[in-house]
Image 1 (cartoon, rainbow, N blue to C red):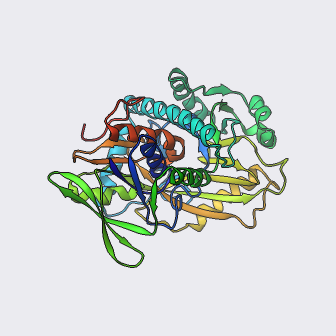
Image 2: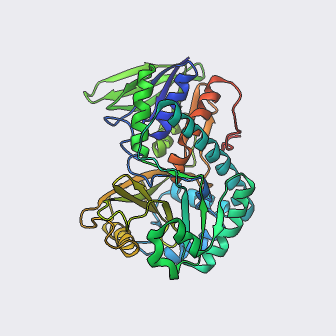
Image 3: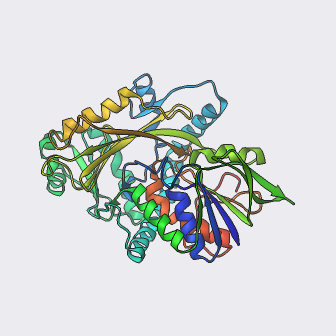
Length: 419
């Protein structure tokens, strides 16, 4: 089949690779000048099956209320006079019920484990280099109540095949000696040795080069303006290029992997996606003292930050700001990240020249992504991965490719709203 993939992030590029591997004629359309230029550009770097507990969990509502009005809050809800934000927030509250949280964890862990396997297979097959590290992910806690609350989700993840092991402060420091100065404040930790880290943008760029070598066509600098439909099925898209000219691209199937912007493109066809932009921040620092900088990827529970060593750089990312489609950097939130990193690892990096970035994560209320066929023939979606796009990218690409081809899938995809 002729398949159009819309979006050149980790999700779209992975989809294009696996569709081509299945024998389809694939074209990827991206509005930027290359792949991984937006949400996939500077994320936290973790391939984190162990971080599968969604934002919507039983403890979240109280935390959100406590954080209201705090400009540096880990999860900041800026209330806006828009119906979509309020309906999304109500859906989020519903997903905080314990039974729904447990169900969502099961869906996320299953896909994340599958995706990690697909990622490793791609790395071996294509000899991909992306500042990868296979030293696991260490999640440390400085609040006893938060650590106690983590034990049940950790146990559930172990049941599902994710070896998220609860450990004490001494073992945490043994795994990552750079935490030694924090030893007396760590009340507990958990460690998943199978998790990984790496630069998502470098991976996506390398995979795109490999895909192009296998015959995938990439069209950059081109905006998709609308989906085209004939006889009840999608038959292509209308686009506008940098020259201002409109063009039509025909296809037998279209995969929409535009992140949070997928919602606006599908709405005119009556397909309503429960997506809302969650703006995440990151800061990248040059490492100046390798002995003081962490080498194991970390998650700081108190500040909801993740740390990944990417060669000679330290990437720190986290927080979520629900404030529409605004991508501007908030100086207060940026400064809060640097203060925290500097307090944990003084002298490890050049903190005078941080490279700040913000991207819009496509968040669903449940935290589970939207992968599969829409009610319109020939139209598929691959979006809604929230903070776990890098973790779920390779597996989501393989999953949607199998669904487009009409064959059996290796795992069951998460449920879609209309099913």
